[in-house]
Image 1 (cartoon, rainbow, N blue to C red):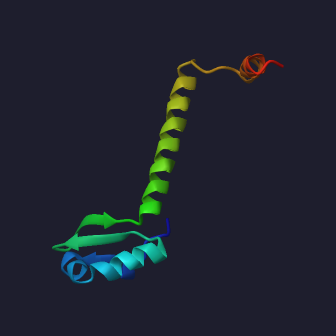
Image 2: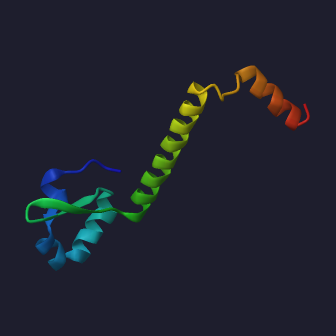
Image 3: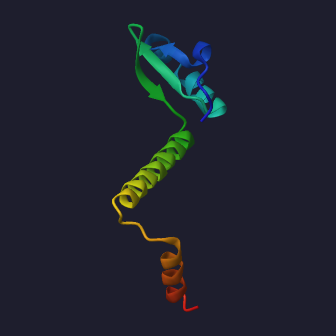
Length: 93
């Protein structure tokens, strides 16, 4: 996801309502999120679908990494040599 450009990517709800199509085009072309404000405070973020999906995949991967770290710290991990031997047994080498 591209980095947010404050002067271009933060818009009030009233402006968003009147220019929805142009803002959708903007997020699709720039791949940057659009922050929508109401009464001067951020209330929503509009993202391109592909950018959202990529973000979700990254979050899932980071959650898996954190789970692995927690398991290793708890002593539930398997050493390299033992894991390699188990894999070689499974594939019949």
